[in-house]
Image (cartoon, rainbow, N blue to C red; front, top):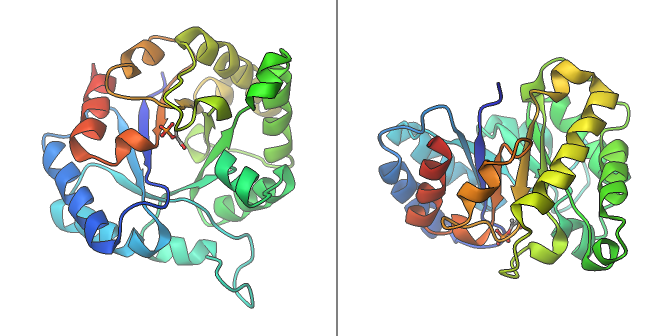
Amino acid sequence: MRSRMIAGNWKMNKTYDEAVELATGLADELKDGTGSVDVVVCPPAVDLKGVAEVIEQKKAPFALGAQDVYWEESGAYTGETAPNMLTNIGAKYCIIGHSERRGYFHETDEDVNRKAKALLAHNIIPINCCGESLEVREAGKHVSFVVEQIKKDTDGIELKDPNQYVIAYEPIWAIGTGKTATADDAQEVCGAIRETLASLFGKDLADTIRVLYGGSAKPDNIAGFLTEEDVDGALVGGASLKADSFAAMVKAAMN
Ligand code: PEP
């Protein structure tokens, strides 16, 4: 049985003070706990420490995630963040391969694979994003495209525990556009991802790795996705920027 996960990707939003305020508001909204739902918030790098302090002080029922990492341990890589820097401030998760990083910053599957390995070596759980463009979907190649991404991103990785890895299927055409995939669209690809995971890691592990949907998920449409067999939660962008809407999604996942 897989427990659900709701993860918030704050992207390049929220100054340090605003991030502390949002995390505090979310801790208040979720003060009665989140049941079996795992909740993660991924603020910008400069806000991580402040959010970590809120989590600790308020005993908040959510974990801290970063939005990116570099695969080297330390050194002359101006602007980058090493995995042990994330561990040191209490990050438990890290998004990798987000379509905005693949698109704007030319991140390749090989880069994503290196990042995944570096995170796993530091016991940080990757939230590995994948997803197709509108062009690929219209050509009817979305399933094979995403399956290839996952194979490349996880190449050479050995998992011992299904909780070491999370996949987020995020069709690019649905991110931040208000255009959501249907629950059936999400299930089609999330199901194919799970089959791929089974071929890579064995059925038992694949049956317990969480596969999330992301792309204009909101309080009023999350329930539909969660009824699908292979959708275990959501990676949420816009709707994670307000404590009440993100908390409403967590509460929907608790039902
Ligand atoms: C995202 O970028 O991870 C995302 C899902 O964004 P939004 O919910 O705003 O579409």
